[in-house]
Image (cartoon, rainbow, N blue to C red; front, side, top):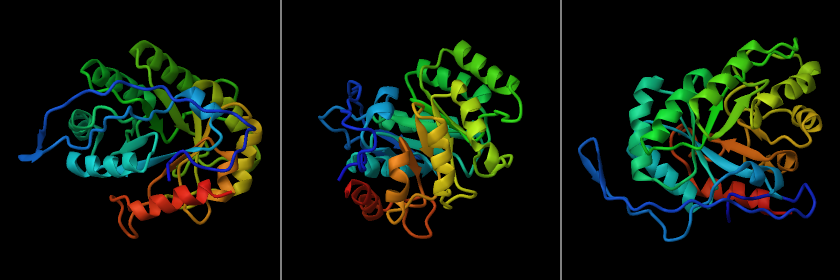
Length: 288
């Protein structure tokens, strides 16, 4: 089973993915321990592009790894790539952004080819884009940034914060995809009657509109996702909470990307992907 998975929802589109050349790497040291870069494959890595998000017949599953250290992150990246996932997001729940950046350098050195995105917890693109541009210039590129809060206000047409983030993105020169939260967990509540307006006002400022349930591990109402989908017929739409092998079929026809952590981790474990659960999610989506 592969992480590009699900019942067709947009007709008979065929997908294609941009490919990146693989870079050889010697073994590295994490915390004094030698860590061999033995997981590199002879095949070209999978990737995520806007074209793929828009045209794939199934949503892309992107595991979210709550990073503890480079070795733990690499171990879980390998699980996701072995499962055929097109991309993986990395997030820093346990330490600040400043401590996360050197870990990201080590992760990218150990695994130069996978499509990796980043969430700097509680940081907007205004903080993230310059850092991601610097990492890319150093040879440690990350191909997406996911912010929990797009800083878009559905109650007004003027969007000064979102405009400022867009300006910072342009000036930084960073070339990745921008996933940003709208009606997202732990952010300013939005009246459900305004979901469609929020989605439409947010879309011009990002590549992938991203929403969620009310809390980590809690699924969104399907009616909410349907409202977003109706408001955004051609904008990529992602959800970032509560998708499991049991409910994936309910959401998959409405989505372009699924960001998932608790739904594929070992039960009660915040940090480790369970390959069996990931395979079950793939199977649930692939089964008509």
